Image 1 (spheres, one colour):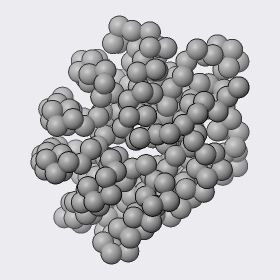
Image 2 (cartoon, one colour):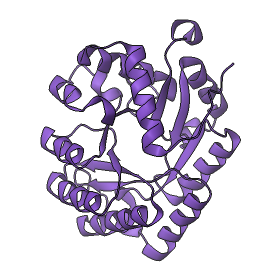
Image 3 (cartoon, one colour):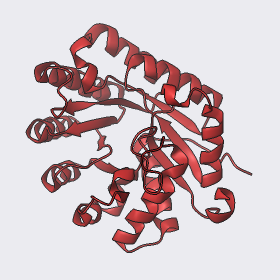
Image 4 (cartoon, one colour):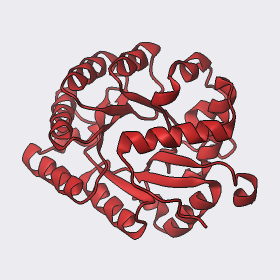
Length: 270
């Protein structure tokens, strides 16, 4: 059904946690459904070094279709070891990781002390500069620090994306002003989402889409396990708000993802 209905749509899921245990029972089927739904690539996020190791193995089984990243999430910043973890990130980049992260700041949950979050984030921004890789950034209720750290990193030449963005216009505008990207997930399909102006604020050439699976399944799958094949619903929502077609938005965000991550790929379908 997906292949028939969405045969024209070609998109890239710029942020999926394929290494998550939620996919252990049917990961190959999930990837097959993503292909059928129109994905031409999936970026599998390593939000910890252990997750990055698993994501790298998945990517190795799906060359030029699944790519991986490596970083340490702000929730785990309290255990961040600069020597150990940066060496692991360097190793992953040497083996093909396309970005550093998921890293950043989360002052909503505060699972790690804020000073530890800032130190871990700053270290990962430095290694992204060193390795000439973009950063995938998690930001929640940390507007002042995120804005300052993004501005400083961009001044040093670091490229990045604010993933699964639900923040303020001011933060988005600050990131866009220094050439960073903004990515939207299935949250924008939720009934409670009413900030349509934010969905229109991001220019075409700095817009990405993502599943953030297995989390945040879009309507009509809300409450279920999310997967990359569901990104088409986020694309449809964004296209409607931005006054374009789903196929056009899928194509432009795919082109943006290729450019941002430096993807070398082929269409995996016949």
